[in-house]
Image (cartoon, rainbow, N blue to C red; front, side, top):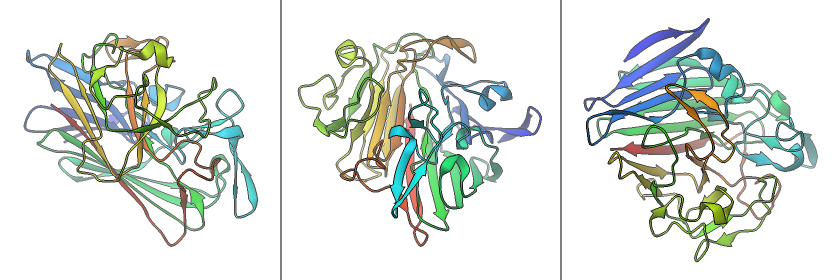
Length: 329
């Protein structure tokens, strides 16, 4: 592991396994700043994007590689009710809804960090009561490990001193070709149900079957096959269990021969096809519409707004303990 200074007061961690796969991390937002791997032709591919400039992570950057929270995705009208009290959150999505933890959510915070071994880094952050409108003091820990099986293992842990919502995720953007459109990537998602969204990309509260719709990836198909019919993908896909050993999503590029697999304890995954990317400059390339995709493991979006969605309130005597694995080969 290499540890370098990253700008004024931040750190950059570079993890490398025996296969030459590289995972870069920073303590700004406990972010992945890049994933590098050799393709079938022995060319190095930047499979997950980022920047070598620390200030990239301190401003609006489409959450590229960032940890996201306290509550990922959208909370309708930036408010929720808990124990008969209305909490008002920052409205950072079109000045109407709350998105990804707010204006200065954990994506932009400096985490404390330390290496646990040569290929494991622990990031921790203390989120104070009232931050972005959320109640309770919350301790957040996010651990990244890179294995010799080419697995990026992300462990999420949180505790709170009183009830508060928690829904953490990682917002890495992937392209197994390293650049260009993602239409020719083959995608499998193990999901029979998805959440439709309205014109503001907010969950409607409906839970619909994926079968015989553009949202059906139970049989592998090209990302671009139905992307126009779907209006671009920005939807949550629900899993049937929380089994970490069950393959939940798989992406393959014939061009590079690279495969990305996803495993998680979380009950759902948000698949985003980069619909709103527009000239976002990252290392070695520029990301425009449909130049990258996200597989964000999560609890259901707008869970704070719909009583029939699973509860995301963390009680003071409980622990938030989740795990996600990205395997690349």
